[in-house]
Image (cartoon, rainbow, N blue to C red; front, side, top):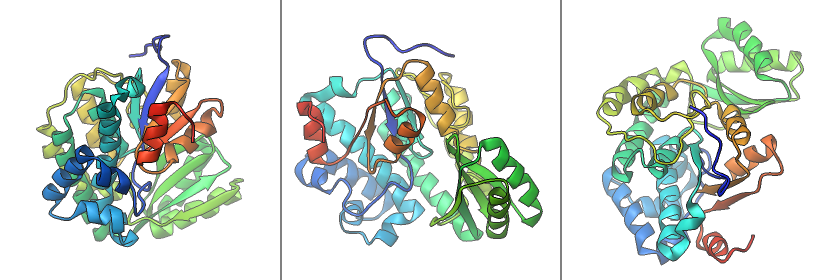
Amino acid sequence: MNQRFNSESSRAVLFPGQGSQFVGMAQDLVESETLARDLFQTAGDLMGCDLVSLCSNGPQEALNATDISQPAIFVSSMAALAVIENSGGAALVESRATAGLSLGEYSALVYSGALTFEDALKVVVARGRAMQEACDKTEGTMASILGIDLSTVREAVEEASGEGIVAVANVNATTQIVISGEKAAVERAGELAQDKGARRVIPLEVAGAYHSPLMSSATETLRPILAELKINTPVVPFYANVSGSRVSDPEEIRAGLIRQVESPVLWEPTLQSLVSEGMSEVLEPGPGKVVAGLVRQVDRGIPTRSVLGKESIEQLLEGTVS
C-alpha cells in the first residue's frame, strides 16, 4: 500500500537498532526527567536488573550483551519521545511515516500506534534473551562488505555456502551489505567478495550471526509470543524490514516480526521507498547516529536530527541545530 506523504509534513521518524548502545546513553535524561526514569525502571523490573545503572555506568561489555542492549535501546528511544512530547514538543515528533532498523522496528510500531509500550517491552525483552541464547549455541559472526552491490554479494554468499551457513543480513546501502553466518563461511564469502571487487570487508564485533538461519531457535521461541501479541492498525504509516515497504495489516506486521529475526533487514530499500514517497527530513530518537549516517548514504540532502540526551532534546524544542 503506497501513499505519498501529506504535503504539510514530510518528516519520517526512524529508530536505531542494536549496535547503537554506549555507556552513558540517556543518563542525563533519566537523572533529570521522572518520566524517563519510570520507563527505565519498568524495563529493569521486568528484566530483573538495574537497567539505569547498566546504561549509565556499564561496563560496555555488559551493555553490549544482546539481552541487555535490545531493551536498553528500545527504552532509550521511547524515553526520548516521551520527554519531547511531555515538554510541549508533540508537534516536533509528528510524522507521516516510521520505520526502525531491526530491533528499532518495535520502537516504530509503538510510535505508530500499532503496539503499546508495555506489550512491545515484553516482546523486546524476550527477543533479546532468545537471540542471546541462539548466540550462545553457535559460533556465528558477521561482516560488512563495501563497494559491491547486492547481487554480487549474493553470488559470493552462494559460492561460499559449501563452507557452512552464510546469508545476507542487512542491506544498509547500495554498496554496504552485511553478511552473517558461521565463521568459516563468512570469511570465505568475504574473500570471494574481494575477488569480485569489494573495496573492503570489515569483520564486525558481534555476539552472533543475527538475521541468519543461525537465529532459528530464537524465531521458534518468539513465535508463540508474537502469536499472542495484540497489534493494531498503525495510525502512522509503518514500513517493514522484511519488505522495505509500507505494511498496515496487523497480521502482515505479525508475520514480518516472526520472519525478521532470520531474514535480511532491507534498510536501503526502506529508505528508498520513503524518499520516493516524499520524505524530506528525518528524526532519529535514540542512542547513536547510525540511522542518520545511512540516510546520508541514500540522499545527503535530507536533514536528520538524532536526539537522546537532554541537550539535544532542548535544542530540538528551541529550534536550534547542534
